[in-house]
Image (cartoon, rainbow, N blue to C red; front, side):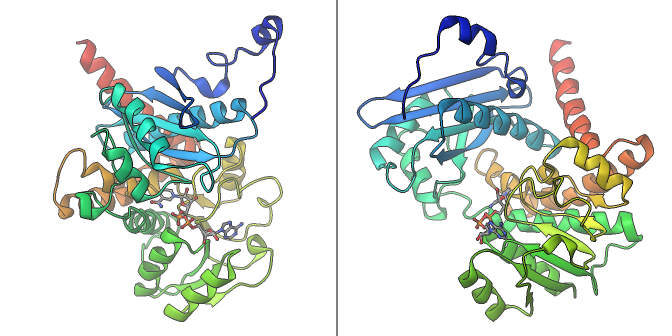
Length: 366
Ligand code: NAD
């Protein structure tokens, strides 16, 4: 990456860290550099009031360091609210490693990264995210205990996507209860956008309940492999949003609810696993005005986090299932709160998460 020389005058204008909108009172930001392995990483620790900051490691070929910094701050902050609203004793953090995961990731680099994580003494717990695999976390585990999402063979909790899908299903049912007065999804038409790990597992739940499932993905092989396994229809067009459907389940990318799509959406409910589905907070308001129920993504996609939590505070599978099923109750409560207060569900969910953090903070001060 080219390094640009920025004059101190210019720097003073941009407030590179504390002045960033996404900085939002981060507790600590750690820049990790290792010449020998080429490691350049940023660990963001947003909030540890409820417990150690947890959040995956993303390896991405960022255009520049500003982009990497902004990404880690935004994602780490998001983890704080996900942990809080899920009732877990965890805070929010995240790591970005700058580089191409396909060509620059080596076991040496991962071990060096693990040493940096270890140096934080458990204040930050890492896991996999984009560009990382369970095997990479196993490598990190060689040098630090502060990592989750390691393989079952090594005592980990395995693929979190299965539980993420179950949580999304619970959130979707709660949204149906709120919208239709019944949480039964039988006969409802559901569009699943993105049939990867989470999308595929979600389809299993939907079909078991008698929903009519249509799938879409940019990967033709995935589409066909899923259709060969399940009774689903493939949508071949390029305008998912305008299609007649009861429920839209975004399970691919974030920001699909944006200026270009929002007025086309015909669904009555939006509930999926993708992070940051609303391009901007105001899109939540437009959905509300249009009578479309939005199940906040960071709440209903927390099943994966709940799954890895068992590696931090050991519990049996039943407890993990119970916590995941509680996503139903929380989603319903949020939707009811939002309707009463006039806030959007996303803002109501953020407020609930912040209330829990504040309560703990006040208890600690007593
Ligand atoms: P994945 O990579 O296994 O699957 C994503 C799928 O979306 C792929 O099949 C891909 O081809 C498809 N896709 C990409 N762009 C698309 C587009 N424009 N239109 C349609 N399909 C497209 O990922 P995953 O683990 O299933 O996660 C899905 C989403 O849920 C991601 O946004 C992820 O960040 C989020 N999420 C996942 C978990 C988890 O436990 N895996 C937890 C929380 C959130």
